[in-house]
Every structure is written in structure tokens, then in C-alpha cells.
Length: 180
Image (cartoon, rainbow, N blue to C red):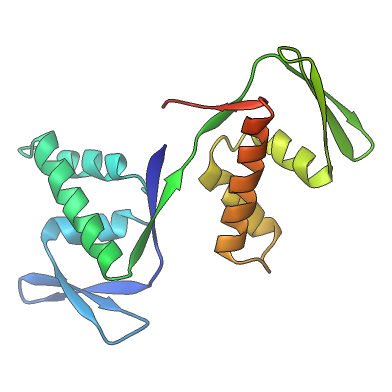
């Protein structure tokens, strides 16, 4: 599992003299950022994994070693999490097992595991999520899909639905966690 970071509070960066200042939109708070911190804050709109931010920082500052970038990004993200600007979320990457056969019957999906010779029935919601695993093979992507489909549900509710669904599929032997 890896961790993805997302902004949970809005803010804007202003230059004050030689410094960058991150001003929160939701409360009267401000934080001084380094040049790298300003770049990383903006990059969080597009890059959500610490490893991606580290690579970006190494590219932006060619003399910076990978270990230095890792330490700087971890400190930066930790500070943002502590100040309630960013949330980290563990991302579970899964894949369907190779020995699975499926057949759609009405709105339900019949799933046969050849290895344990068991048949499982997924309702229409389960069938939709099962098929979505082809394009969205991790918990964060599935949560994004469901959040769009169910705008009335909170992010916590959607996260719990996805976690429970993936746990049930793993318990039935239909998926396995990927090691990447």
C-alpha cells in the first residue's frame, strides 16, 4: 500500500518580500514556505504520492540528492497534515485473480473462482465495482468513482464502502493485493 495526499483546505500562495506565504481560505492562518514548498503546494493539485513529489523536486533542483528530496518532501507533507491542510490516505492496490470466470445474469454478476471451485453472486452495485477494477485498480480510484456517482455520501462513507468491498472480495479469494 502507498499513501496519497490530497488538499483538504484551500489556500493561496502570495509572495511577501523574498518569502512565499500560504494563506488559508477557510481561517485566518498563514504559513511561510520555502521556494520548494511553494512548488510542492502547487504540485499537490496534480501529484498525490510522496514519491512523485520527490521526483519533481529532484528535477527542479538538479543538485539535490534523492535522499534530500525525500526528507524535504516528508517534512513538508507532515507539516501540512499537522496544520490540517492535507490528508494522507493509504491506497490499496489490488488485482483480480487470474482464475476467475464471470457471467452477467440480469443485473447480477456470477463470479466463479476455479481455484476454490466456489460461485459468488454480486448485486448490481458489486458488479459495477467489479468491472471498474479493470480501469480503477486501487482504493483511491474506486473512491473517486463512487464519490462522483454518490455525491450525497461523505468521503468517509465512500471510503468505508470501498474498504469493505475490497475486504469482502479478498476474503472470498477473488482479488489479491498487488505489491507495487
